[in-house]
Amino acid sequence: MPKITFIDHLGTARTIEGEVGATVMETAVKNGVPEIDAECGGACACATCHVYVDEAWAAAAGTPSSMEEDMLDFAYDVRPNSRLSCQIRITPELDGLVVTTPERQA
Amino acid sequence: MGDAATGEAIATDALIIGAGPVGLFAVFELGLLDIRAHLVDILPKVGGQCAELYPEKPIYDIPGFPIVTGQALVDNLMKQIEPFAPTFHLGEMVESVESLGTAAAPLYRVTTDAGTVFEAKTVLIAAGGGSFQPKKPPIPGIDAYENESVFYAVRRMDAFRDRSILIVGGGDSALDWTLNLQPIAKRVTLMHRRDEFRAAPHSVEKMRALVAEGAMDLRIGQVTGLRGAGGALEAALCRNDAGETFEIACDRMLPFFGLTMKLGPIAQWGLNLAENLIPVDTEKFETSTPGIFAIGDINAYPGKLKLILSGFHEGALAAQKVHRYVFPEKKLFFQYTTSSSSLQKKLGVAG
Ligand SMILES: Cc1cc2nc3c(=O)[nH]c(=O)nc-3n(C[C@H](O)[C@H](O)[C@H](O)COP(=O)(O)OP(=O)(O)OC[C@H]3O[C@@H](n4cnc5c(N)ncnc54)[C@H](O)[C@@H]3O)c2cc1C
Ligand code: FES
Image (cartoon, rainbow over all chains, first blue to last red; front, side, top):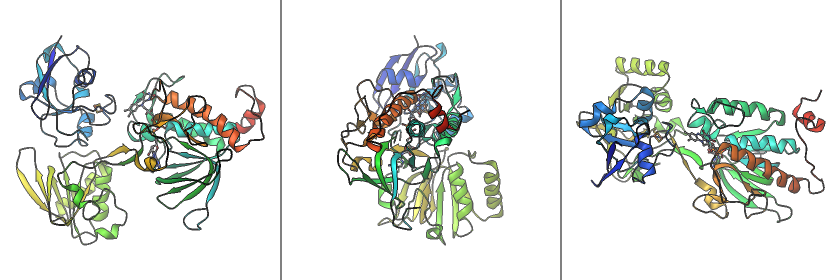
């Protein structure tokens, strides 16, 4: 199963096994990863699952859809590598993915 | 109208706080029992989360609707409750609920922030996750500027006359206020994190035309800090995607980052609360305060699921007990809408 590493805003890393087909947000929530609120449960309607994708994984993780870009307008400290983790579906190619969570989701 | 203007209270059998899907369907269940309702919601529109957070997204677990969007569900509910002619008070937040009655004959005086006063025999709190309120950007020290020079809404346009205004955001609120305030402001700057806007295309075109004429500024970036002493804003510190920092001189800022749900004044109504939810029994969905019910996402009981379908069920059961308060002398007997001619008459479908 693909491994995903979540680094919190203080630098603590947590590596978790994700399931192909699940989203990065679901993987975080199921495993109690802090700093991901996911208030809307993955509907791309709250922007509280914001993460920064490690540069090395940017291409594999893909680019946000226009709906996701619109929702990112509601997040804070949005950067070029910002994504909503409920919109990143885990593929075998994402084995090793590293994302950092922001200090605040809302 | 009994309201702020006349100082008179509106008398009602049932007052529903919150016009989300659960509050709306409660109108139907009360209506079948001859109870008319008034509804209050802080949003300018009905539908709660369905209409505000996911109008275009599909819902798959409404019984009988294999798929229905948030807005379509709300539109259908509005049609379904039409025969019961509910009265809506939108754009108003319920601030206080005081008891005037007794446990056997409850009566509540309910007041909104717009000064509307109700005297309600029963109150149904269908407040979901709380009132929708503007999101505050987590800019360090922003609290000191709030309501002095940073505002999340425009109550009076005149307060912005001849000001240097920074408007932040890319949706309809940001663009509409940019266009409305530009003629009266000293200078308007619109800032958004990217050069694309969610707002209606014609507003974006108008804004771009004003920028081309030199009548206002558009900057791409995000606010990271504020400068100015004693709540008087002098400049916003900003950063763009390339990491460059810059300042925008302004004495008013209007950030538009959408809405979030905050419990709000409910905490001050003297009700029992458990982790920001209102505990109820599962027979009548009544709170520990007689005559005050809680249905939908706002309530808590063993096994609670925050689903629309649970909220519908809760409204149906609460209505039975509301009937006992409103018509203590009348006995209720069980009827189906399919076969009861009296229910069909109420629905306006009698043959
Ligand atoms: C993205 C998303 C997807 C969802 N998908 C589903 C799904 O597939 N199936 C499902 O069953 N559920 C789903 N839900 C949950 C569902 O939307 C909620 O259960 C439902 O909206 C609850 O309805 P409600 O009427 O109790 O409250 P809400 O819809 O939250 O409405 C409450 C209303 O009360 C108002 N209010 C609160 N306090 C006050 C006050 N003091 N004065 C005035 N007004 C006040 C608020 O402004 C709000 O409009 C989803 C939720 C989200 C966010
Ligand atoms: S969980 Fe709400 S946008 Fe991702």
